[in-house]
Length: 258
Image (tube, rainbow, N blue to C red):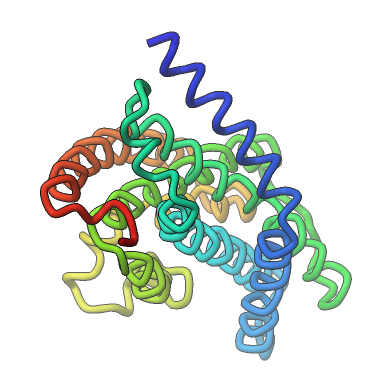
């Protein structure tokens, strides 16, 4: 367990540093959320108060974190496959899930840039006051939100091991998750079957935790707890799926590009 914890810890540190120095990732985590936020501001600005605009800002933040996570998670395996090291990593003594897991968490972690840029954009351009009702709980809500979304990306990344074009799955799931988790429109406006699905997705609870602590609509502690519970479930599910997909990839020789 100590060895695995060291692999995960060092992997998280290395990948956070790498992504923080990658111009594309920095641009994606800062520019994309600003576009989402601007569209949300313009949609909600007419007849809306500062609280509604702040809610739109937080929604754009979570949208940005999810977007960069889906792209990064889907691309994590593909980049290793292109570099010709995927088979070596799979054959390494450390379990492959311990190698892959810090990549997806690191990808969602740099989503903190999305949070900072979106809130500053709203304050400087649209004049939205950054008056948080529960600032300590708001700060406490950020790590579980980021980690749970990263671990949902870990589940997604396990699919890419089996399918060489699995990166397309990440792009395909970007917009549906925005909708079903209530980042674009309230879940109550969706068909009845959408709400149970939203309960299984981390962005739903992360958004609720951030909005409840920022706007004072209630205690975010239950939402934070749900992020932690889902994180544990995603870790187990991702590890199991990754093991199954690796076995299938070995039988069909689909780990490499050739």
